[in-house]
Length: 540
Image (cartoon, rainbow, N blue to C red; front, top):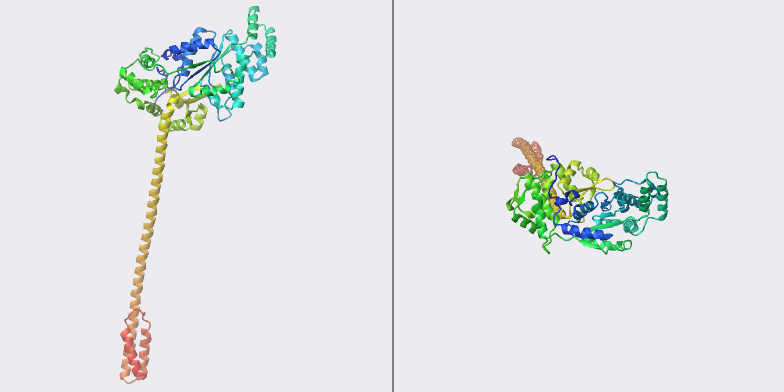
């Protein structure tokens, strides 16, 4: 790791949604907060929809829920629930189990409601937790916010989606079954923890149906998925609220106003943008077709400015030259975040993000334990990726920390980097293949040259052997010739003494000796002719 992690509070959340603690930083959504709040007060079910990047999660977390808490600070029963996509392994919960786990969090349980737990059915368990919250909130509405609700439809329709929707319908439209009410009532009567007045209130709440409100937040391109739930939730499609892009004026406020807040809790001192920079940023985050502003893209740019330009480079006035090329900020955001890691951690993190976190152009969440085991990403690395907002972290109902890419806006830059890395890997493999081929060719050529040298050496040795053989043969031929000449001279001497018989004897010896000379040597040719003539004379 290149630097130590410290407690960091930024003015711009980047790709992660605004939290309830960042309410003061959520700017430009005041009208939406008021309008949605009024609709929620009037209706039992509301569908909040809008394009990805328009800030639906932020509106709920930093806008609606804080407003609800302000109105009833001690009696709030509000739940921000995320079902998460269906897990590929057996460790994940069903949507019903997830809902039960959220409702079981942070409430004082009433002992007289125990028969509901003992019944141990999905319906009885949900009634148990709802009734406990009804008592805790003194019969105020219990509001369930289902964020990124499109994730429900990754589950099996018959086994998981329909039972979940049916159960929601039961909670909305029916009261708790009478036999459970009676069992709880009997337990309540034998309890000695109530005064007479408290007992009357407890009985009243027991038989009063809890007021449950549901908010379903999802992307506008997934809105049609809700049609399949109307069998169980017939009023589901009656009340919509579309969250549109923020206005240009609101976007300007969202850019420059957080930078001017004076508060030591932020990691950076106050700073300011030049007007031209704000114009340039707005031009970059506007949709080319309709001119609407993507608030998440805006937050990524502002977070990059705060973290890189203000904190790292100590720039307190952001000019066009300081900001640089806005078009590359999304790529730089991903790259600079990874560059904070050691080379080894960077390689492991980029592999996990590019291979696992994005599949079929969609963000896929993974448990921290899986990432640690499968990719050896330690907690320090995950913490840095989360603090940079490249990854967002949430705790699921099983108590596990779940990590995913911060927002859909980052998918394209990450995939672009993944493509670059893939091309680099292909080029590296190609270079290795070429190198191996060159080495192979060199080895082959070396082998050929070695064989040629051996062949040449053998040829030389062969030529030497042949030369030596020819020399030896020539010497032998010469020896035979001289011997034949000696026999011929002896024959000439005895013939001069008229000893014809011995002369023929010596001439035959000379002739037989000449026959030993190799046929390709002409050394004895004339002598053979001479001997032939002499013998013809002596043998008429």
